[in-house]
Amino acid sequence: MLQIKIFEFNAFQVNTIILYDETKDCVIIDAACYHESEQNKLHKFIESESLKPVKLINTHCHIDHILGCNFMSDQYGLDLGIHEAGKLFIDVAAEHALDFGFTIDPIHAPLYFLNEESVIKFGTTTLKVLYTPGHADGSICFLSEENKLVIVGDVLFRESIGRTDLPTGNFELLKKSIHEKLFSLPNDYTVIPGHGPKTTIGFERDNNPFVGIPNFD
Image (tube, rainbow, N blue to C red; front, side, top):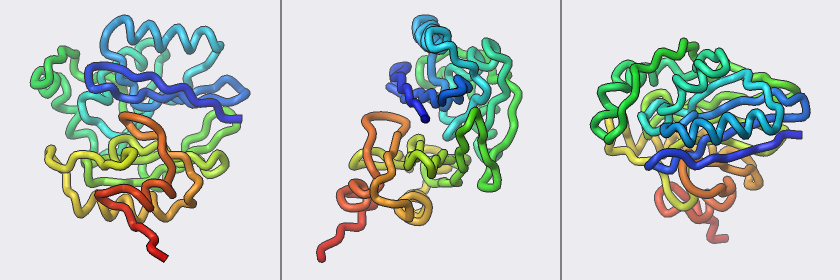
C-alpha cells in the first residue's frame, strides 16, 4: 500500500513529498530542503522508517523546488529526473537563487530526462508522467492510477493555479494542460500540489475560479 509523507520546506513553503510502499523503496519528489535543519529532518524520517531512496524526481525546476537536490543526490547517490525542457532552469540555478536570497552551488546532481513515455517504478508502485507546461517549461505531474493520486507541482492548487508571469509561463497553455491532462481524470483523484493543502480533481473542476468547469445542471 502506498504511503505518503509531505514536508513543507524553505521560505516558499514547498511540499517535498516522499512516496513509499511495503517494500520500503521510496521516491523523493521536489527536494526543497534548504537549511541544514530541513535536510536533517528529511534524512531522519527516511532513516526512522528504514526507507531506501531509489528515485529523485522533480515536477519542475523553479529554484524553490530544487534547493535540496544536490544534498539528496549526494546523500543517496541518486540521479535527478526532470523533463528536458526544464534543464534551462537547472543551468542558471545558482545565479537565479541569489535573486531570491538563497545561496546554493550549481546543481551537480546527474540528470536524466522524463517524458510522457516514461514510467517510474519503485517497489510495487508505478507512476505515469504527464507533461503539463504553462507554469514553467518542463512541468510534469506524476500519476498513480492504482492509488487515485496525482502529484502536480505548481500546475494546480486548491482553488488556484500556478503563476504564469514568470519566464516560460503562459496562462492559455497552463489552462490547456489542466483541462486536458488533469480534469480528464476521475473526480475522486487526490491532488497533491507543490504548495498548500491537498484537493481533488472533482473539487477543482467544480470550484476553481481560474480554470474550473462548473456543472450547472
